[in-house]
Image (tube, rainbow, N blue to C red; front, side):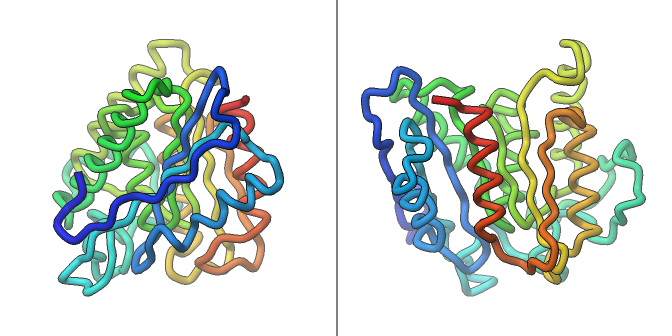
Length: 259
């Protein structure tokens, strides 16, 4: 359910309404933006006859009074990075225990995770299978999406997760959720099985530096297995998305939720 003043999600229905195996992609915008910022991507895909069986949902973040803008959670001093410690380097071992790290803004980000989980439940009630639902996002939307897929109620069971120009938050609850998923994956056979994750990032991103992205990528690989992470670095790209990024994302979606 939307918070007070939060706009309802925008939805773009699949072109093929009679698809035998419908799928849904829930995509979250970044800080200060809204659903209008990305909905055109769905229209472009459909104009190109890509993924005609796919319905798109673009949620709107609530207005954040502290930030005086739309936000999935209040940005920290390292805006918008991260929830918990923000000084980790890419050289830090992904196996390091994060359970003692502070979790600034944890309630807000988990409230957003819960909201997206509610949207997932709505799709399940419509008959869409859980492994035919992908959650993704840009910047803050990426952070929330990774938590939904790696540490939330549906962790490891989605069709996939897409993270663009973002990062993986830290904190005790995140760590515990990721560890639960990792241990289950290892017990079930390890590499090559389970949920896949797409991660894309620009090498000139000054808001979410490459060291933060690479740290996130290592921790995601540790959680879901290296073979389940489709990672792309885009030379010269800043804190934005690009045509090449969306083309690669399209290829990923075609693999994890084929028609």
